[in-house]
Image (cartoon, rainbow, N blue to C red; front, top):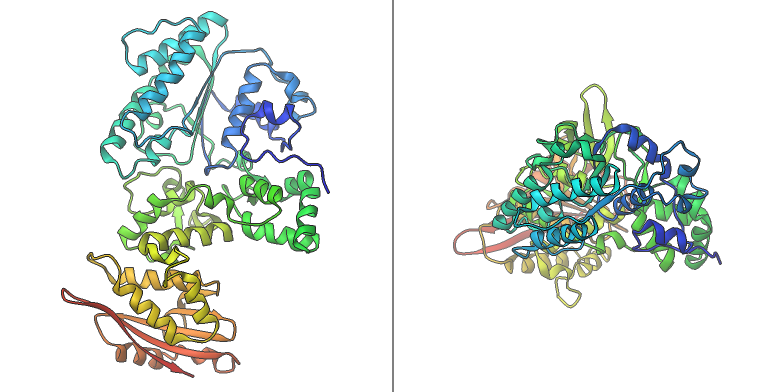
Length: 518
């Protein structure tokens, strides 16, 4: 049994070091960051190590060299002169409150005003920020380090509150927009967030802001490579393997499939999610910890509203320009999904300069589909509901397509009333199938056309063709005329052909279907 101490949920560098928790050394990035420029921005997904990185930088700027003993920074040519640090952390506040952002900033500014002897006048938050920066410089004689954690949380939290969103955007615009004018008092400013929003002023007014989010040299600054995993956590992985009654390689493969796969630049390393790894090793159980710690409801709602077919999320491509700057009202959800960690770089085409995006791992794919299904049909994630998707799973696994379709027809009939589209019904069916635990593929190309959905559940294969306000007969004719089942002619599994027609008009809604066994 290893004696490793896992810093689950801990984000304070000094506490991790002083209390002997495992710390994956990222301090070799300090000097390159200081050499990179004065104003730096970086986006990374939530719970991916941004807060710990800022805490590490805070300890460095405070001159606490004793904390870095044995770490990479201790042997580097660095200036350890203590200097004032202004650290703004937007993680904890509830920004759906009308004045949540102002209250948070007031609290930070009041503390720094007291510390540096800056009298609080009847001035704007923006002016008070400028006064604090100047006062800190005047009192210490040292340029100031400014660390801003999760700057975009006051925006991401309130997409469904447009008035508060606009107000918070104006506050952020005035608050950060004056950093450039205070250049002579600032040694270093590092701004982190989940997303880079194209219409927030820190990216227009701060035209000298250096965005390192997709710079190869900083690709691995947050998250853990497999080399780091093996170097720091081998004893913990061995403990987990023993608990799961597996050998080491089996357990490492399970961790890799569940938590690895994040790639932020084409030349970076594939990275593990540090939060999930720590939870898995501490609990000795592999579960969707990162996804359970907070769900992207705003993304799921957007995808539903726009009628995006869920399989179309995975495997699409974007340009670099699209990936590095997003707007909350953008119709394309993929760039924001990349920046928030729900998609990652799977491939890069040097000729077209396109980035192919895919789900990084099983934790994210399954969790996102569950959240999306919860937005479409809340009952499907209630274990006491007759529409719990595990019941659909049993129907498929036991070769009962009739029960599956009856359950689906009843579910669709009970959807909340609104102007549904064909995309809604196709999306719900796909999500239920893919969350059944069986491989499910949409729009599979054959030599005569593409089937809508194929599900592979143990000894059974299900081939679906969907129509909308047409007929079951037309759906079945298409399955036969395009020979969707032809590629399984020599397969020993039982093949079921399912033609379905979604019916919706002003008087009724339903699902008619026909099933044939091959």
